Image (cartoon, rainbow, N blue to C red):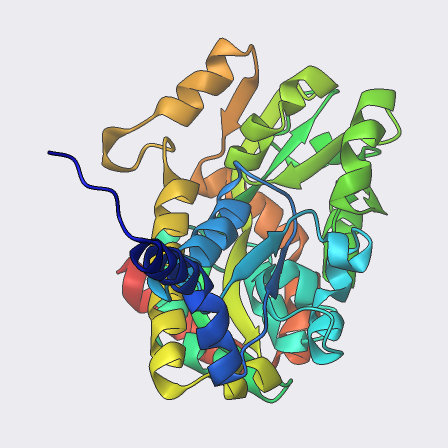
Length: 349
């Protein structure tokens, strides 16, 4: 026999359901947490740097039961698309959390130009030696003095060169080419030393510039080249030269960090490290490590001429840009660079 709940029982069920729905909001009120925390990142899915930001936000929101609600604002939209202003915006309270490329903050934090010293890192062994060692820890301490709290190192990949005009195998092949770079005077000096004409512009402006021929080429990780179909923007030649690395950093504004309870800080840090590990794996996918060449094979399917430079060929570019390296080593800090060089030599055997 079916029974009908009493009016009192129905009221109790409704109140219980309402209480369950309101629980995250009540918890936030009790802890003083905000209804939303803004996380900024340049670009958007599916590139690994942006994917890592979304994964971090999702992990924090889920594992906190909604008490810490993180929303991603891709394309650096909180700073009008200018990714070089994100660090300043964090210190001003406009951005709560972020996943940065070191390239975009290097104009404000000179030590971050370490990753942009031409042909310092050379490969992932060199990169890993920096982010997982004493030098990486020192760089985090530098950032902590800028009112932000770095939690994890990520990666967007080594930056390779593409162009619409010809294969680039020697420094002289770049002569006269207009090459876009994102930020940092060091990049202008590198390409000037190679005989190219460097042009600075935001990522938002890059695609139309390539399609109209305003620039001949650009430098970005292969994963980004594929995701944004740069082969359809007349970029038919790609040189794998590993000249600089695009490191990623997961950060929280210091004032925001200090507002969280200790247990929630641990949760946010653990989520950042997990997202960073996945980001690094994604950035290296298909480039030959472990036998996976899917990204390289996709480039071939799209008709892109891929030129992978030998160590000897890379050295020709390194020699041409050595004055830039030496100059910027002074800016980064000679002791920091010396320690980085030693760590890389040890890692590469």
